[in-house]
Amino acid sequence: MNPQNVVVYPIVLHPEDAGGYSVEIPDVGNSWTQGDNALEALEMAQDLIGTMLVDESTFPSATPFESLTVSSPAIKTLVEVDMLAFRKNHTHIVRKNVSIPEYLNELGKKQGLNFSEVLTEALHDKLNA
Image 1 (cartoon, rainbow, N blue to C red):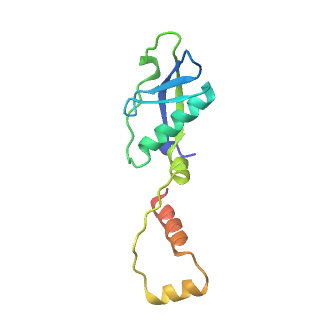
Image 2: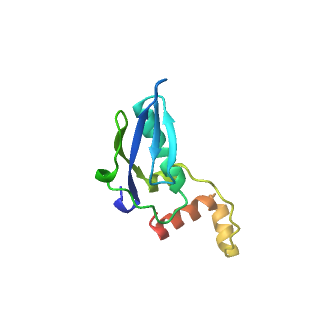
Image 3: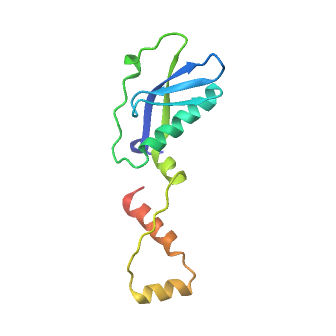
């Protein structure tokens, strides 16, 4: 895991009277999500953070954990999201029209290459992503 791709944000779990938790994510658009139990609430927070930041090249600064104040029975904790892994698992596919030399097209077709896969791999290598 590359630390440059990892974001860590404080969140606040708010126990609900009916059960489960609502989750406040102050540093990522002051977003809210929820879960039926604490584990699900943490997973939902990770997913929401990843979704909100998936297309961003820079990430919002995190509030220092010590600076985040909560009232009982709320619980503050940290959530970590590996954005590279998130992007790999939650990507939208876009169609791109590319031009390549004809001889490479013919050689690739003869070898049964998946041109989209080859381009994706090359972009990952080129961009260190």
